[in-house]
Image 1 (tube, rainbow, N blue to C red):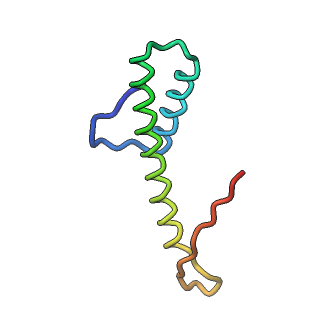
Image 2: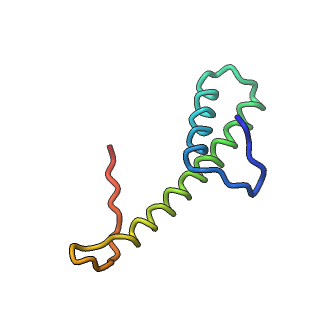
Image 3: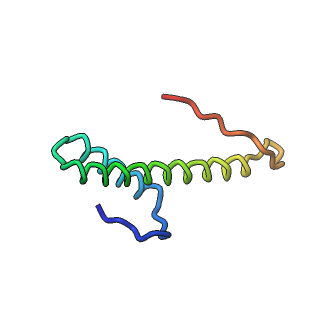
Length: 82
């Protein structure tokens, strides 16, 4: 798993991929405690980054909505659980 330097942004897709890889490694259960703690910390950072990127995307979607006449309006995005 390649880490980005502090302050360097990665795409949502890359962050999600790294988070999935991190979770898979932790689920294997064969890491030393220090390694597991480091990976867990990285996973928390990646999850926060993904949540931030999703919130930003949601705000942009809400600002772009248009009605049938072409007038722009703000419509909150409704998230459904699958």
